[in-house]
Amino acid sequence: MKKSAFLLRIPQFILVSLMMFSLSANANQWQALYKRPAEIPFPSDNLYSSEKAALGKMLFFDPRLSRNFNMTCATCHNPSFGWEDATAGSTGAQNTTLPRHSPTVINAAWGDKFFWDGRSATLEEQALGPIESPIEMNTPIETVVERLSQVPQYRTWFQRVFGGEGLTSLTIRKAIATYERTIVSGIAPFDRWIEGDEKAISASAKRGFELFNGKALCVTCHTGWNFTDNRFHDIALSGNDKGRGALTNNPLENFAFKTPGLRNIGQRAPYMHDGRFKTLEEVIEHYASDLPMRESRSPLLINISLTPQEVQDLKAFMLTLTGQDTPVTLPLLPY
Image 1 (cartoon, rainbow, N blue to C red):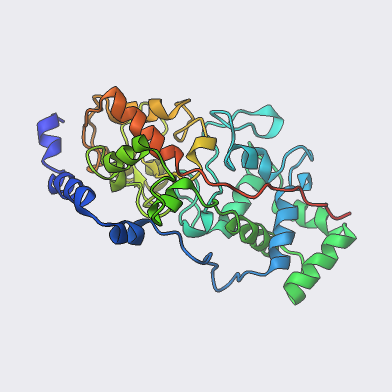
Image 2 (cartoon, rainbow, N blue to C red):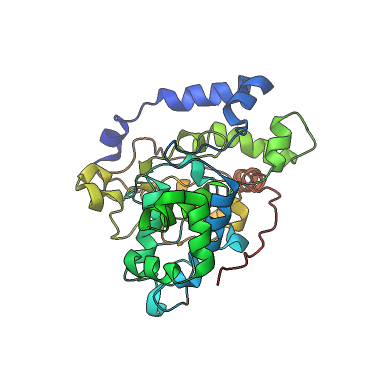
């Protein structure tokens, strides 16, 4: 497909309108777009309780959920690395290198369609995937239920939290999902700036914010306070992984992966679904390169050019999204 034909599909007014808005929006408009939510959303069929979250935290860090007692959820979602992994591909069962980089758990409470390809509709459903995956924790959930049922303190905890439901596959997943929803990025310099503290971020970061919402078009996909539209896009990366297209068998969704949120992005290298980029500069320069055309390429993806200074300004802005998080303490596991 020729570039000129492809670009006819793109709503060109988006570029102009976004740039005009970024230059004219006042502080109140920016606050409305990027203000942090006051509460964490929990689904009606799995409401929050402090005891349920505490139980979920135990399970998140308990190696008894893996076949060989050598992995936990935190193995691939490490709080020290922005709740993901510091390697391109995570390491699963039997030292198997996984083909995809682990996505972050940060701010998952505001997400939907989990995993890079969106194959799980809820966090409760997502929790089951790594546990049972042969190349990850590799444990049938029935085995996990049996193991935990042999631990007196776990039986007591599940009875206390879930009453008559007790310890089941579903209540295990509900507890883990509840804990994951409490993993929220802390107040960042960007938040203080949006609230009116002009000294909270640098001049370079302020220029990067203008670029983000204007010329660079980052905001077309990285929207809202968590900087993600929770949708799936083919951003013209090379490779054979068809992403969501392999799940839906829709050729227009080939090579499409979920837009990651940008909170705490400075802690979360390497980047992209396969961890191919080691630095934020590499990520930005990808979008500023001559991107190939193909049928599935997102119509929101417009070829742009950036100067070296603009690349550094965008990076400076994104680094202001890393908050001051509360240190994570390891739980005392039941016995």
